Image 1: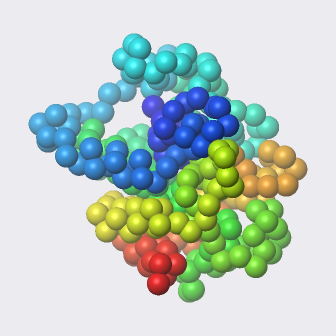
Image 2: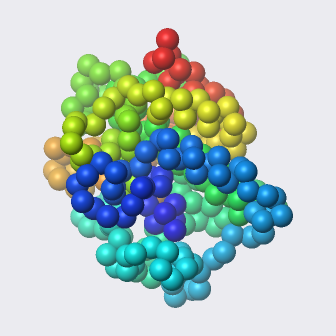
Image 3: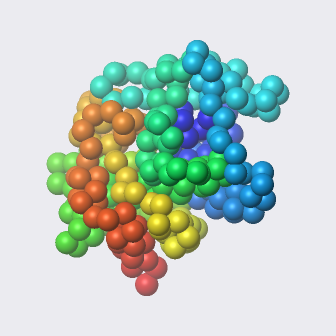
Length: 267
């Protein structure tokens, strides 16, 4: 449900309390745990097709009764570029990121994939999208491959003069910014974020595809008149220069380029 409904990765909870362990925050170490769990499930369990909802329902309908203590219509919303509001809260249109055999920023579907492999591919790609797009939106660049955003764009994210931030936590709804809330200002650095990027690139490099990042200018104007970075769908509006530049590269090269650029932050 999460990858179909939201732009980012898995949250700890769907409660919007303003605390750091609740929505909309998604933590890199938790994505690592989820991927490791999927990798260690027996193949005879994960080789089947991924379930799909009925035509009049969203992927929320696939969750067993009582497993999520929230009605579908009170789950956190997913804002959409160009609408000034959220995607539908119920029904098939709530799955705004669902594509044929994959999800937006979830990599490419392959014949014969079991549901375990599908979820790993989608989450690995979505994690790289969260890390790269937020890093690029705050000044990150890769010489000869990914140019830095313009000063006008970086002014929107208050990142003029910055060279990119790797945040301790991301947002499930906004892949071009950090998470928010909690008892302290979101931290940049960041050890486990960098580590999981390198781990994902090394393990899933053959299925990673260059992500589509939201256009920073369009996204900001669509939400709050340009005061800060957006919470918006990468499937709507024009793509950023990050997507345009990286899509010119073979997927494996793009993945390695991202990993090497971020690895430089650790040296």
